[in-house]
Length: 123
Length: 123
DNA sequence: TCCCATGTTCAACGTTTTTTGAACTATTGA
DNA sequence: TCAATAGTTCAAAAAACGTTGAACATGGGA
Image 1 (tube, each protein chain N blue to C red):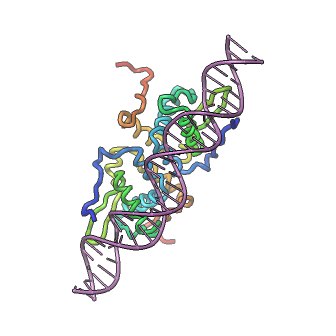
Image 2 (image 1 turned 60 degrees about the vertical axis):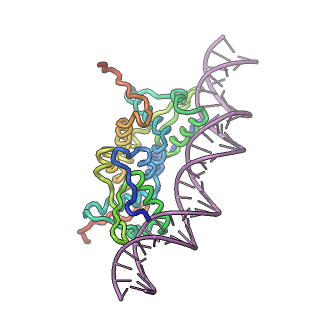
Image 3 (image 1 turned 135 degrees about the vertical axis):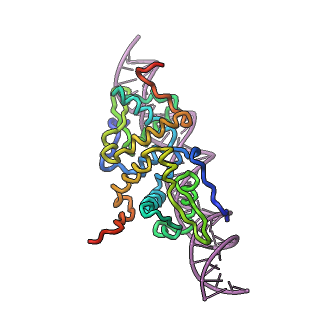
């Protein structure tokens, strides 16, 4: 089991690969969920996505997301903690990630994304 | 030969399909070229893209671009004139097309896109 | 009218991608 | 030490995708 998964450098991140990665509904949902987690500056581990697909299928999508430079995986004990490569992406492709995320948010129902968790508000 | 190719309505345009369409280098190049043409508000016909692929392969990519709502085709005699669905896309996914296009422009070399034709400026 | 130019459609082919379950590795806690 | 937990890897099957050339449709000009 690779101790530290490979990640491309910032400069190696390619636009077509990023777009292709984001075009898959499962991966888009993963990225969307990571982006929400960003707000509370913590990370998520694989198990947090179990609603989206089976374990091995998720591992496949995680690998793609890492390989194309969309997210970073940090190994900690038996867990893998993941986060968006927000800064790298914003430098490389300014405005792209935000545009995708806000477009996804608009279509959250259609894309079957988790509702945005308004961390504090209760009705 | 279908007289008027089918195009989705604005509301039918889906984010994953759009991203998938843009993730193919040939289609990205087509969209990029259409965007440049936009500046002089004229349209392009199929033949204008002959540098990118063979005729039937281009027809395949044009069909995808139409089906996912990225471009519009107008039949005029023996020609098909095409243009970006700029307004529909901007309403549906604000900022997305511009972010993709400027990211593509940044990587024009890597993506083997035609250099932007600075219509006026000369150095 | 006949031919040419412009594009589309179709079928075939090979490649890539996605999905699945089973086997496996590594770490933690009892 | 042993079992449980968290993820990855592998191989096989299914599905989706991109490319090609040949055949086709349509409209315009000689």
